[in-house]
Image 1: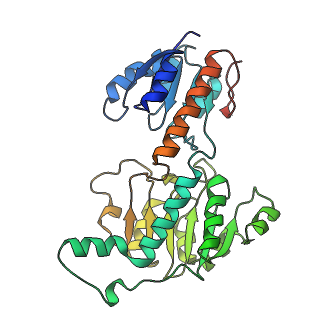
Image 2: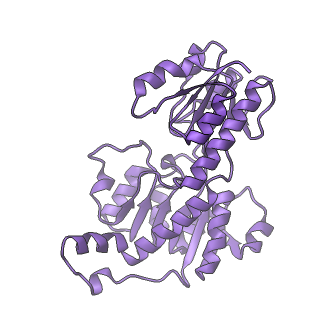
Length: 320
């Protein structure tokens, strides 16, 4: 099985297993960006968590690159040039469902933090200000309405957990049957009604040309002043400038943002200065379990392709 494989700093077990089947080059794309740029066009396969594969990488490989395997679910146009991959018949794969439990659990952690102000209270206590009382009086999840936009693996896991929290469910996803929504105890509604009626809105959909800035001024204007937005999907799904204006003017109660249009954001990004925003650095799928499972799955996809087989989870079809 010929070929070099470019990987990030993954589990030693995964790298050792892959090293028995191919030549492995380990590079951290953030810590060693120049080396990543140099190696990417020189390999037969790339396993990517955060590393970008551009049109230039693909074209400079001159047919050498066979597969780009993602360790997670998302195949962002900002991270992988899928058009170039399609043109040059490079396989692009993902790992559907691998981080669904991790993201769904974090959604509820973020919802509780927003509803009970735990992140703000923690800061106050550590600054020796025991500020119990009305300032941090919160609200319960029980009885509240949760709007879920996107009902794939993650959205479905969120819906299942919402039942345990005794929440009412509104669901918007034009690609799923009504029977799926009903089975989860939810009600299918249009996007406008979901934003207008929900106490919490959580986004679980891919970033593409159709969903870019899908949530913007129009949707924020529909939300209750007491409502919260959670984005643990992809940064480009939300119009960040519109979100900043909405939060500055306190037109909604707050937001939990795990993903940004540009990651990491600049030091002067206005969201960083707002108290009604809970921000995390793209932690949605960042658990030991989901990351190692994604690495194993992506490594197996690479081996299949380098052996002349088709991968199990293709997003873009390559040469057979």
